[in-house]
Image (cartoon, rainbow, N blue to C red):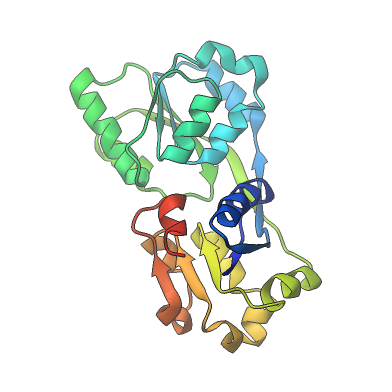
Length: 241
């Protein structure tokens, strides 16, 4: 099966290795790239906080660029949205990383339960966030009255591939499946010239989505070939192949 990966180059390479191990052929067409704000993260870490929350492995990868700045924070508890983010935070050196799996609201529910068991923190939880992002995590903690300071640690910047790159990835040959990790990547994908000019060529392509929210970005004409992962993580997404 030929599988198209739309992730940023670094994460796309890792996904491609997983797919190759499963016997699939891959094509890559990055539609975004991360732009880190290291100064904002360093300034945020310098302020008092009770714990750190992350809802993306991209933030955990950012830790690797902080050098000695991170050393004095490695005993701080990290609440992480999923196993990939948790593994990356542990690899960065954090000793205590807690994760419920699931999505941002699941992480918020875990933090609410943690505060109920151990008491409300005296200092805010530092949420190192990305742009764009869903707001469910922040909304849930606000409803529970848990102090949270949100700092935007990175931004996903759109990448517009050259037409030749697009046609090679999409038409030579047409992929059997496309992996969608975010609504933003799905919306960008369906604006690419082959999808606009000859959408009928892709009616048999599987549109594999990380979550139901991601699937909302897939046009209705592709509904019959759209499949949603059983859980919002890469393992469940790849299980659809």
